[in-house]
Length: 164
Ligand code: HEM
Image (tube, rainbow, N blue to C red; front, side, top):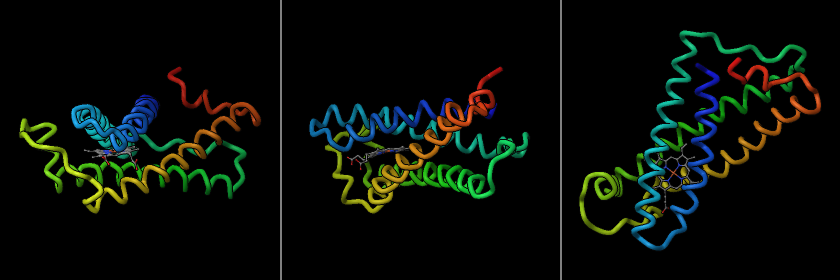
């Protein structure tokens, strides 16, 4: 279950980054609304998966850090994992906050008519933008560490993260 949630989250995160930047930079209102509908639904999907992952810890213990990992590396890994959760939850909260405060939720999903607001006028846009950059940095660290273990240390995180 945890492995399935991890890979589903990873796919959704790629889709969220790939839709978030065009959503912020598209000028055409129709295209922007279409992208944002997909983006918001995927964002809510990631929120649901993250809450499910946190809940899953009560049912199944969190896997231990790989044997032989040096203490400071283990601390760094735990910090990056914890920050990933915090930032993902913060991104979802600030995304929902933008739609609620601006009224765009009703425009995108409630059939209301009108023009999309400038989201930069709403406070949650700031953490959403900063969170994006922090998230990209954390994903690079997380993926880099996994690739290092897989191809340099050869102690096989893909074994832990596969379905077999
Ligand atoms: C983990 C979840 C999410 C990620 C990774 C994500 C990612 C992004 C990214 C990369 C941007 C562009 C930021 C920039 O250029 O500074 C963005 C903008 C935006 N996102 Fe998200 N997002 C997430 C969740 C959500 C959710 C749940 C909603 C709404 C329910 C949402 C609504 C928006 C809106 C309204 C914008 C602003 C578009 C604009 O500035 O015109 N996001 N997001």
